[in-house]
Length: 477
Image 1 (cartoon, rainbow, N blue to C red):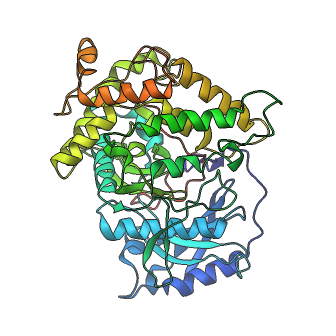
Image 2: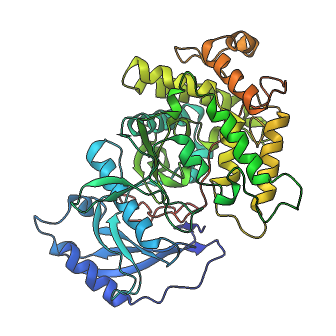
Image 3: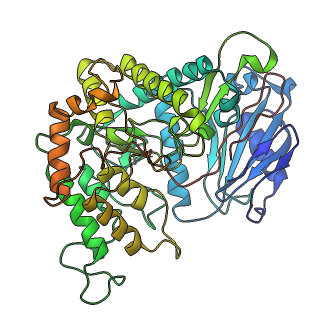
């Protein structure tokens, strides 16, 4: 990842070598695509996946055909040029299809795509996307400076995004792509964990199992297991199988229809304008959700969760009280914006039943590609053992955290009521599943609960905002 600050015009990252680009061709391509003369191309950042440029255009060339969003951005747009890697073309195509789908079927602010050429051998020198430049700054750049009320305003708008994404429904798990007729369809899952796309899948179990290699299937053995010893991948597979096998009655947040999920739903990919920055009145306003690489359709369990920036970490105990207040506000805000009673009930059931069986699996196998420093067998062994022993932590950031529980009206229950709440049908169902996953062992009913957010591999931020005065905004790390 890399970060860019307009204040000091400096870079802060371990950056890969520069792409070999023909900037004159880039500017010519942009001029033809937008039918306005491109006058400059300024590099904002380069990272593992992309190089990002801010392009400026000559205002006098504007016509009635000029995109209003280009005018609104001060005749500036973003050019994102991709490095070649596994699935680069499919990943970029899915990113574009996802952004366009969200623009068409929701009110979530996402960048308009002006032009794309995903051929790595094009005249510019790399796969290219020209897109709208969103105003504002990355949320992670302003969050710490906001008041508690300001943070609540931010979370209410993020809750609206979550509620709207939950309403974009699909019958399979996969990545969006344009089909042969030009319509958006669910295609194979594009993941940093896969060398090649897999699927699409019709069940949560099929999808999650795809992140373990075929050698982990029952009856086989992996090269990482010493002769005569239990195979760790088989153990992890079996633990997940036992958990999912108890889906009776079906858990609604794991069942179709599936919904659209942003793979890196963090402050670096949320753009906000904060009027207080220039002394104006009013609260922060969401201006853009960006960077849909690896977005996918999936179970609501992985959509309904706390943003990582309101989760507790042990080195910031001074934030515990505010974080608890903000988590409760976030849950109420989502609950209020869901479309019907069934959706609200599913949401509350999901928040009350976060579990190590699913989150621990996602953290171990679904977040990033494994390298030599993260052998699969080691991760599988720890996952299976933690699940069996009931030692999976509720939050990896804070050892003593016990997840909040919520009433059907989305009110946070006092901690003294948690045991009573465990008697409701949702938690009885979870206890049954956990007991099966633990293969009959008895454990503290809270020990396997976890609201950890599923974190995607770090990616370059695709866009940066420009203020009304034409100054560059911040680019998230």
